[in-house]
Amino acid sequence: MQAFLSLPLSPAIVKNTAWDIVAWNRAAEVVLTDYASIAPEQRNILRIFFSESCARSQMLDWENHARSMVAAFRSDAVRSGASDSVEALVDDLIRSSPEFAAIWRDHDVQTHGEGTKHFRHSSAGAITLE
Image 1 (cartoon, rainbow, N blue to C red):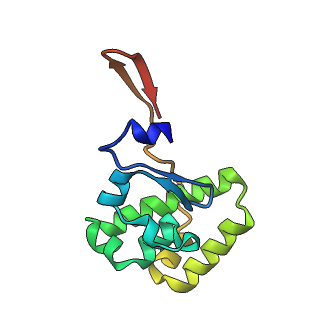
Image 2: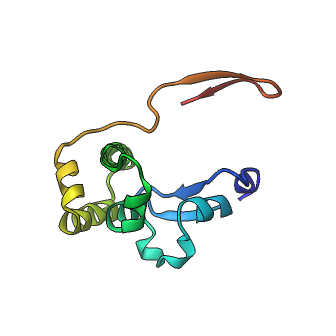
């Protein structure tokens, strides 16, 4: 939680391997959504993105974001061993969202923010971010 306290103006969430949202800071609540108002079993990034109309209306270029998100999720799911909870989530989303089903069938895979960036921070020195 200390990291969240140091990012008061930056929306931040913590997710597990199935992309269930397990923690968030106040900025995420203000900018993204009030996660506390969502039942814990429904607090999933993909579930919210593909089923909540407010998530869809707030996102410019929703389809490209959706494609990138599903491709990154597929990568995370494979890396984590695609647990039963991931398989159940995918099955549920395929049944409930035609858009998710179509994108999932594309079998695209990508990582978050592919590539490495090198910075020289004025007080921390050299930083490499992936």
